[in-house]
Structure formats: structure tokens, C-alpha cells
Picture 1: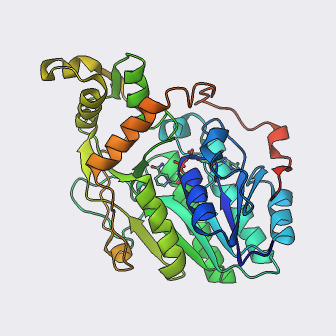
Picture 2: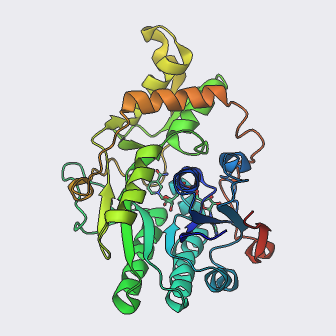
Picture 3: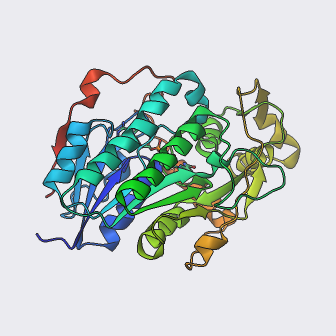
Length: 352
Ligand SMILES: NC(=O)c1ccc[n+]([C@@H]2O[C@H](COP(=O)([O-])OP(=O)(O)OC[C@H]3O[C@@H](n4cnc5c(N)ncnc54)[C@H](O)[C@@H]3O)[C@@H](O)[C@H]2O)c1
């Protein structure tokens, strides 16, 4: 079958990546969507069941840090578009094993950019999915795309370093890059290490929501479907070389988030809500808040369409309906360096 475009998604088996892959495969049957993913601890094969047999989807299990594999993909395929999401993403783990974060988030990005710069077929777009955490904390100022980057944890620092690499390949080789920096994203199928699925999983298991420290931490939350729409919009309408914040005005203190989830899941009288919340010892470094402005993306026509009330209702329902989804996944939050065997290319499911 002839395809009009070939899109390589890295990290397409993860939380956001799987929603992006499903959307691309379903919305663009004339495009070939290749997912390169190592299938780390945070993935479930069930996330892509809806598309795994589709003719325009193919999966490559492998490491984005493996230059032989990545170069081979760019030689074998006429890649038009890259969405680069593959990363280590858990902030607390990034203090425990920063070298793993540096390897995947920085070296992996360099390997991908290098392969793209050598490819015979010219890339149309390289979309790097970064995070608002690169700005560091702010109690009052909302960050614009031109604000300085002051990351305060190894995860955010490696994402900021990767952004710099992405920019340098635009400056040096004119790889047509676009960077997005999004808020915390939530929705169905997110692995239980992130705050919303963690609280929901604890509550479903009749355990209390544990909150680390007593600082007034708050977060902006964006529904995953809105984030995917933003990535597709910058692909079509974004300006090469630019950065786009992807943010929502919805912000909630973490304690209030826990209370809201207790009310939704446990349905207890108001006087009992706090009985389901427990404060535990604090994480080594945590940003209180990091607000961003998204006018630049809104000028392209993007708005967050899913309200918090609707998004969290859908998310809570999904976790209630799928209590066993993550059951067979071992939580190895603190990991050592990847085993050698993981770095060898292994194509497990070619395009149908
Ligand atoms: N979740 C959020 O709130 C959020 C917000 C802003 C930006 N982001 C960014 O979006 C991207 C995806 O985040 P997510 O929440 O879906 O994370 P996730 O942890 O669910 O997914 C990461 C994916 O990367 C894959 N991966 C890890 N190491 C790899 C390697 N060496 N080679 C190939 N694949 C590898 C994993 O197997 C997984 O499928 C990340 O780059 C993250 O920094 C996430």
C-alpha cells in the first residue's frame, strides 16, 4: 500500500504516545505510522490494541539511543515527520538514577536528530514534546516561550538539554524542528506513578492518598485528548524553529485534587473525606507551581476543549472500568542502567 506520509512516533506505547498513535492511525489512514518504543515498565501492550492490526500502523520495539537501529529506520523508511516522545518521565526517579534520564532523554534525542540529519529523504517536521517543567518554579509570573529555562530536577534538566540539542540541529542542519512545552497531562491509561492515577489506584485499593510534604503544591492539568490535538495542530500550522506552550487555565492544589478524587471514588460524607488523605515525607525537590501562557498556540486556533469536570469524570470512570489494566505490570520505579539486550534492534511487528 502506498502512503502519502510516513510518521515516526517515538515512545508511542507510553501514555501520551499511545493516544497520539491511536489518533494518527485512525484519523490519517493514508499515512504510515511507525511506533518506536522500548516498552519500558510504564507501558501496556493493551494501550495500542485498538490499532495494532491496522494496515497503516507498524511497531518497532527498540531503543531510541541505539544509533544502528535509528539510522536503519531512516534508511529503510522515507520518514516525513517525527514526533519525539520517548523519554524517562518520572521526576522522583530522576533523582535516583539521573544517568538513565540523561541517556534516554538527551542521548536518545541526539541519536534521533543525527539520523534525521543524515537521511536521504528530507524531513518535513521534527516535533519535540517537551514539558513546562523546563521553566522551573514561579509563584506569580506565568512563563512565555521566551522565558529563561531554570529546571530544578534531573528530569526537567534533561528535557531542557534535549531542547537545546533540537535547536542546534535546526541552526546547523535546518532540521525543521518545533518544540512543545505542555502542562501536566492526564487521562485514561496513564501509569500509576503519576499523581492522578496514583491517587485513583490507591483509593480503588482502599488505601489513603499519600501526599508528599505539606507545601502548597499546585498543578495545571490538561486532558490528553487536548494535548494530542495541540501536537497535530503544530505539525500542520506551527512555524519551524518555534516553541509552543500547551497550557490550560485549570490549576488545582494537590490536596484539593486528592479531596476531589476521594469524593468521586469513595462517595463518603464530607466530614470523612480527609480520612482518606495522608501526608508523608517530602520529595527531595519539588516545584510549587509553574504556570504558563499559551496565547501563541491559541493564535493557531487551539483551545483546551475538555473541561476539568468532564476530563476527570472520564478518567475516574476509565480507572473504575479497567481496574486490572496495570495489574500485570511490575512497578520498577527505581531502575538501574538498561540491560545490553534492550539496546539491540528487534522489529517485532512489521506493517501489515
Ligand atoms: N505526562 C505529562 O504530564 C507530560 C507533560 C509534558 C510533557 N511530557 C512529555 O511527553 C512525553 C511522553 O510522556 P508520557 O507521560 O507519555 O510518558 P510515559 O512514561 O508514559 O511514556 C514514555 C515512553 O517512552 C518509552 N521509552 C523510554 N525509554 C525509551 C528508549 N530508550 N527508547 C524508546 N522508547 C523509550 C517508554 O517505553 C514509554 O512508552 C515525554 O517526552 C514527556 O517528557 C509529558
